[in-house]
Image (cartoon, rainbow, N blue to C red; front, side, top):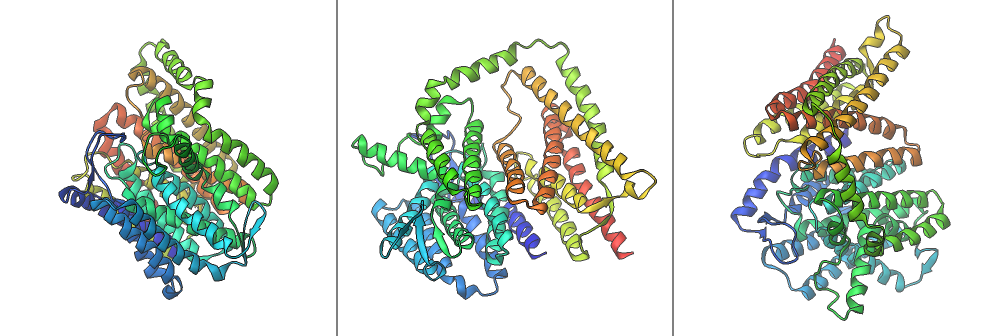
Amino acid sequence: MTFLLVFFTSLVTTLFLTPFFIAFLKKTKIVDLPGGRKIHKDVIPRMGGLIIFLVVLTMINAFVDDFNSIKLVIISATILVFAGIIDDVISLNRFVKFVIQNISAVILVYYLQPLYTSVSLFGITFSNPYDYLILLLFVIGTVNSINFLDGLDGLASGFALLVFSVLLALAIRKNDTFLILLTISLLGSLLGFLRFNAFPASVFLGDTGALILGFFLIFISFLTSIDYHESVLDLTFPLILLAVPILDTVKVFFLRIIQKTDPFTADRKHQHHILQKSIVSHEITVFVLLIFSLFFILLAMFYLKDFRTETTIIFFVFGAMLIGIQPLLLRFKVTDVMEKLLHGLKELHVENIFLIIKAFMFVSAILLVIISVASFSFTTSLNLSETIFLAIATFMLFGLSLFQSKKIESINHLGVFINFSIFFIVSKLSLPFISTSNLNINVLDLIHNVSFYLLVLLISLTMILRWKAFLGKRILFSGIDLTLIVLMMLTFIINKILEFDYNYYLSVSLLEAFIFYVWYKIVVDIKKNYANRLIFISFILPMVLLITLLIKKVI
């Protein structure tokens, strides 16, 4: 119950506060101007990541029993945040920033020192004082690598969302209450922030947000490694887990040294810059890098399962491929291949294409109703307080959506996905009401599964036809949609590797919710005037379910 409260409170608070903070940043001119090596062409507020830190700090203060035990962590993080704020507002001298990062890192290492017995990397154990030096290097390097990764809309925050999801599952396996609270508050706040940070971004993390994300990523990775290696801080796990930003930073750093340029000077040699030159769109570039991240996350999980030699070898092989991604893209002519694929779709001849799309969407709507009815419940394994809280959270999200609809021009698509997710998660923890009738439960499952597979088929065909209709000029999936796809893939991976039964229900629920969400996106894309009605229905579905379950429990 506490964890649900932390997640939804972090999510709702971030969704509510961020638009006001964006307005404040614009008014005070704390913005990122276009030009030079920057990709964006508009004036975008920065320092948005401060919201994440404040929300997480509030949750920790409210729910961690012994706050004094983690005061050094909070002090270390706060020092980084103040450095980021100064840098975002007036720009901070590079040397001064480095000194402040070292002070923060020293405090963090001092906090960690009693928690581990030794420090190792790829089986090599480091003695004193080399263990302290390598920990400082890891902390400072990771913090800066996330800052470097924050070069495309939603990339750093999407990457952090994936890693924190894995770290949450691992914390649950070890029943580490502090790490569960910390990661789940980060997840809730990040998911809300992505609503505004994914392409096209309304606000940037800024140095403030990137530094604090890097701090929490390495800190939680360290604690997880200690938990799973019997008090040994094995740095191999965080290195593999955070390989995408760390390897990119190492590559660029040494490349600048070889070319006899300042290794700390910003340029366009990072992975995201190279990929964007070879890939069709901003969103797809972020998606590809998140897929790379997913692969290294998978390797890190296998490393924890004691496949250490195998994962180490694979890490070096694919790490080399990631570092040498530019010649690989040129060798396999990725740009040419993608252009040919797009050209083939454009040349596909289909008559009455919009009529077919509308017919598919009508049949899909019927299937949506069948699946919803088959999933609706009268009884649940949730207790009364959990059901009440979910009902309150849903009503709060509904109120927030109504409030922000007048302040934000873009439709709150994320809210629709969350609504469907709540409906299916609650349904998976409940007994479908049709099963209480004379209809056999196996027949009900068959109806549900067949309807779902038909729905997926129709939506897939519709997406192909839609691409042909608009000649690739209108992109259906936004940056946050692609991040959600990778996140769902990750939940299935966690379930398979950790054999995490609870996560299985979460994975299936998110998949069903996303299919409903894609249907909504297609309909709104074709008929924009349907948007408000469908958003309202997406809220009604979980609210009616939760109210029904509450009435049944009270009676």
